[in-house]
Amino acid sequence: MDELLNWRGQFPILETTTYMISNSLGAMPRAVYDRVHDYAESWATRGVRAWEEGWWDMAVSVGDKVGAIIGAGPGEISLHQNVTITQAVISSCFDFSKPRNKVVLVDLEFPSIVYFYMERRRRGARVEMLKSEDGIHIPLERVLAAIDETTLLVPISYVLFRSATIIDAKAIIERAHKVGAHVILDCFQAAGTVPVNVRELKTDFAVGGVLKWLCGGPGIAYLYVRPDLRAKFSPSLTGWLAHQRPFDFEIGEIDPREDSFRFLNGTPQIPALYACQPGLEIIHKVGLDRIREKSMRQTERLVAGALQRGWRVNSPRDSAERAGTVSVDCPHAREVKNELIARNVMVDFRPGAGVRLSPHFYNRDEEIDFALAQIEEILATRAWERHLQPA
Ligand SMILES: Cc1ncc(COP(=O)(O)O)c(C=O)c1O
Image 1 (cartoon, protein in one colour):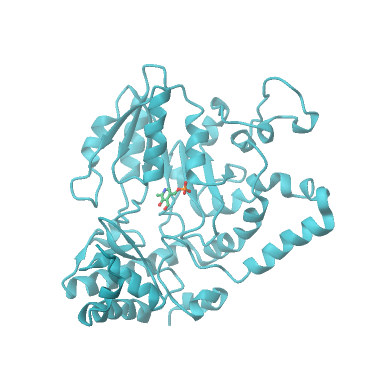
Image 2 (cartoon, protein in one colour):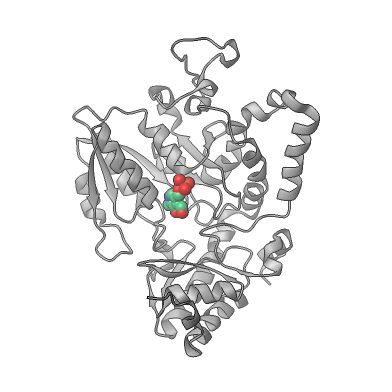
């Protein structure tokens, strides 16, 4: 008996759908109804007093719940609106007009991050973009060689969104530290499905969102800064939450706090800070070792089922190298995905990847088999044709 299935009752959407899209949006825990109600209640009954009764601190205090999952200590994380903004906060600590101005990127990074750093070229950044050879793996040796004495930042995903490949973050961090560069490890597709320990990795920064594998909903992204580096960095993208005395309303230069508030700026997104908590609590309770063990078993089942049917798999074959998603490049993948959604099998499609199937700790093995059988049937009956776009 799979004990993790006991959690299914906590996720309403599992009653009506085959939910295999936790790489995109994790299922909402039932307790979110109550937490959002708590938010409304505090606003309705406490009004402006709610700020000093918890709201003001939430962008750091709730961060501890993420910290417990990714190996960060209390007070070491600040919470922001999305990952792109966390990259903006981090990069605003650096001066790209100096000789050390290179940003090393891989073309398998999430596009938003690439767009962001390409625009940093207007501020003097030099971007070296390394191309993947197979669309599944990063070219590790070339990445390591590109990280040199002129490198300032290496923003890189721990798990690649397109293929779910787990990269060798340790090697990259060690290389960066040898030459004085800083690594921003994007743990979005890792945290919640693969054990992550930012302290052990010694990464300078770690970022990610909570809406996928952490079941925390949209609106919250975490920013971890290695504690010994915190005081060294002062974001120029800053604001009154980072100031030592925000309620003195002083005009002039900021006197930045020394804790994680230092990385905040304006008023935090309070409703999302309420809504994200049940997911974080559940993931912590279930435990990453158990989640990972089950994920390896279920993704293995998906890979085997896809290969058996003759479909290409655009994720690593080796479970040790593969995170929670299997990209199945079956024929007519885009239209097949649309038919799957019409049949209440929740998956997504990415060009160059195929249909992405992402079981989480709450999925049954039978759902894996069902999804694969549905794809087979959609192809055999040509049901995918109804989703063809007119030329
Ligand atoms: C690895 C990774 N980074 C970043 C993002 C998105 O960032 P943002 O929070 O800015 O939307 C995603 C979204 O899918 C992602 O998979």
